[in-house]
Image 1 (cartoon, helix red, strand yellow):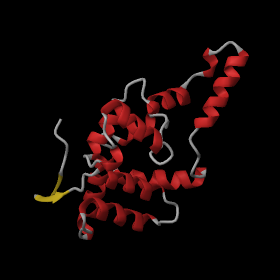
Image 2 (cartoon, rainbow, N blue to C red):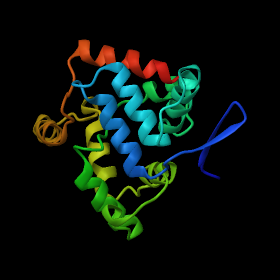
Image 3 (cartoon, one colour):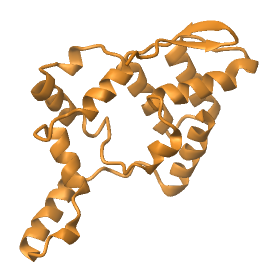
Amino acid sequence: MKYPKYAFIHDKQYQINTDYHVALECLQIIEDESIGDSERTYAIIYKLFGMIPEDQDMHEFIRIAGHYLGCGEQQEVQKQRKRDMDFQQDWKYIVASFMSDYHIDIQESHMHWYQFIHFIQGFTEESMMSRIRELRNYDLSDIKDQKVKRKVMEAQKGVELSTKLSSEDQKAVDEFESLFI
């Protein structure tokens, strides 16, 4: 698969900053409650393209940015997935998994955002991140022994994802992300 490096808008080519660090910064900006929607939009566009486009082109840049940050998937597909990983909260597990599975020190590496995501999707079952995700997704109804069930529940609590946003704030983020369709 050839990863995108450029956006084409009105027959003009714009280079995308494809480093995964930049995409992670964009995701942090999206979740930052202290930033207003317009500032958030401008920040993401500037991070990815290194410039702020003319107003008449902004909608197209927003659409391309959303498509890029979603690794080419439709937003509906992304929303259907249960959230079982957080880049910030799980960073130590991601680092460990890159090292164990690929022998890559991800903190010292620069790679395309899509490649970074594809590597995460390809973690082996033995990787720390895969084991954490499996634990988070484990169906407790499959466990009949109450003692074992309590232990798994405690383990799940130990790795549960923090809820960063109130439901009202999450709704605002969802509305903002809908701009990227």
